[in-house]
Image (cartoon, rainbow, N blue to C red):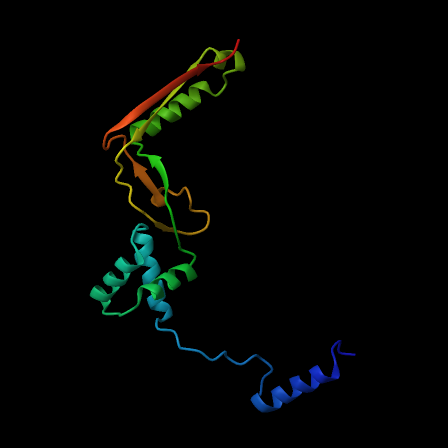
Length: 173
């Protein structure tokens, strides 16, 4: 009638008689080192500067609040809040003028047809640097924040020696 075996019903009744509830008991294990409030503090520190490492956050929390944590605890709490260490996406640094000019260009050309675009010569150039000071950078970000402004690593067109390569192409008539 209940939809389960007699043995299951007997076990549930026995558990209720012994504990007063049918809920699963807490799984034994080491108690958490941090409180919910401290977890929120770690998340706030990380969100303030996404490029801070767990070690830097740990040191900051220790000096400001005298809370002693391990680096792995900080990493676990940040992961638990959805902040995962990832390589940052790189993009050129854009000034307000760059953004305004790009928007103006897009608006003035949005109604162009194929024939008009075929008269345009597109060109691009890339610089390959011999000595880059990239190092290994990580950013903590949540799912869906991959291209968020605060999670991007800005790049500039300068650095050590390198080679510049350029090319151009036009529409086929």
